[in-house]
Image 1: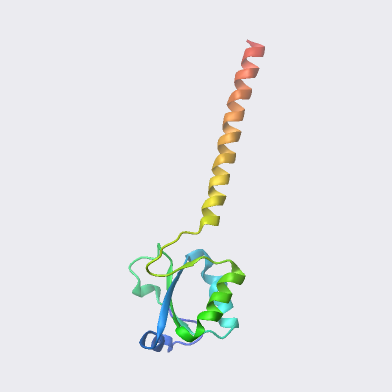
Image 2 (image 1 turned 60 degrees about the vertical axis):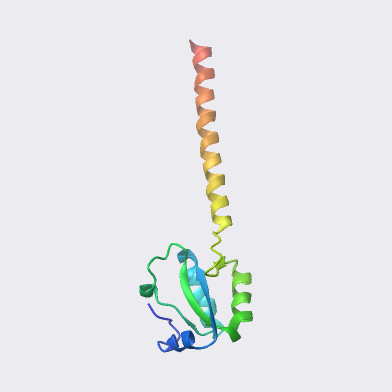
Length: 120
């Protein structure tokens, strides 16, 4: 799965470049924004042993400001090789869902106990 702009973007790895890791769930939006702004990038999932930390993208140093702008405008969390930061907004949503489910569960248990005392 090479870059969709240009199959010959491998040369980016041979020039002054930097790497970013973007989570799989953000891939489509991220690549769409890069293409619409004409940013060249190289990415090949087959070269990665695992995509748990995100899909690795190579960018020219000269495109850093544009890529940063894409990340800010889309709210995509990207990491560099040395700093693996998870998407805290996604974890926050999961935590809220867990608390809500637990609250409903315990609420039902309390309701059953109260009804049991009233009836029995």
